[in-house]
Amino acid sequence: MKRLLLSAAMGLLFTSAALAQGAHLRFGLSDDPDALDPHLNRTSATETVINALCDRLIYLDKSMQFRPGLATAWAWSNEGKTLAFTIRKGAVFHDGTPVDAQAVKYNLDRALTLTGSARRADLAGLDKVEVEGDTVKVTMKEANASLLAKFAERIGAIVSPKAAEAAGANFQRSPVCSGPYKFVERVAQDRVVLERNPQHWDAGAYFFDRITFRVIPDDTVRLANLRSGDLDIIEKLPPTDAATVKALPQFKVVAADTLNYQSIVVNLGNTGKADNPMGRDPRVREAFETALDRQAINDVVFAGLYLAGNQPVAPGSPYYNSAVPLPPRDVAKAKKILADAGYKQPVPFEMLVPNRTLAVRVAEMIQAMVQEAGIDMKLKVVEFATTLSMTEAGDFQAWGPIGPQNANDPDAVTFMSLHSTGNRNVGKYANPEVDRLATLTRTQTDPDLRRKAYHDLATAIGKDRGVIYLYHQRPLFALSAKVTDVDVTGDGYLVFRGMKLAK
Image (cartoon, rainbow, N blue to C red):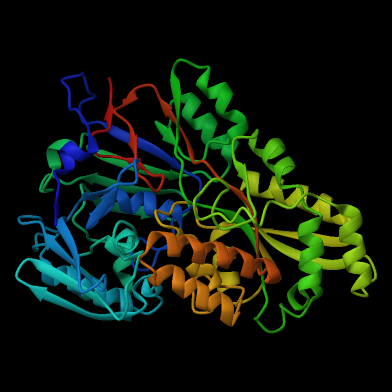
């Protein structure tokens, strides 16, 4: 059983440096958060807010090691099927009710039963949840190699049972957790405001009286607000601006390396919108991919700071199958694939694009590339949150660039979008062999055999191309130099614990 002190593990030193009295941190988000409920949310913007609002059972540090949160210890048993957490004594929710083992069990039950839950797939294969004193035992029907990592993500964020029951479907409008900051207000498309929680079990490690998350989708405007002093931190700094910001002494840049990808999701199984050459015919998708120059996209749009990729994990990862390398661009071959398949050019196609500046630039480059191969791709640029509802409804031919941005286990970037039951498989991709392999990657606890399963999965999905992978991001944050003691989690979020704002 692991017993670690969070303060020592995170390695944060709290000095007597001059701090702004009543410090107010202003954080620029690139997207409007969706549901402020860890069981419903699906976006990284919301996760940034929830990291300050809700404690998790465990955390992942930047060296990819698990650290205590509401759980002070954990242990495996039953041949990798049972995971037991010892719950911290003395922690309370923002409404004053205790955080205990029963509250944790309530959250796991809620994640499974809540209408619209985005966490249900995280607990796929759950057998039972038992409470014994201050211990919660989670037993799966079969071994689950990724289970511990999930409790360091959204499924591990714990809400108040009392508040959740009282609010019902309205809980997300005034969420109650046990984190270092409490909910104050939300103005849609504008801001989310939190205030310091003096009753937090580690309150002395948090130095801001208030955090305001401002929603500024435009990258240029977000950076301008940082440079003017209206913001202290911004996320998703465009790589093309990184060198300029680094050169200014009043600012600094923090990078994070995480499991993530950006891709094009093709609608394969939704009726109506899937009835087009890209949705019906894998040969058209092969021609589409063959027309792409992923490295050119990385060089032009991201100043070469990202990594071109053709699998859910990046080249260099032990889970990457080097036998399925990044294909070179070959326009002549793409044209021949279409001609051999009997298609007359141009082949019509529409891609739904989130209205993020860099996403639109990527889409425009792809549009120009595939046009040369005889694919007439139209772009439908829509507000990001709207693309979520449209894709859930099957109202799209393809969607991208899109993908998970902050993960701590390869399962989080594969199963959810590739397995036929995956909660983010909006393209309705279904392949029995892919389902078998995706399940194997989740249940195989032997590291070598798990890696082989991921390699086999990469080979299997390359035949269908239901998801066409493009590149892997490096999350970049730009900060005022007044923000000090900055750390990142293993899944690419800034750590508010220990962070300070100088006078």
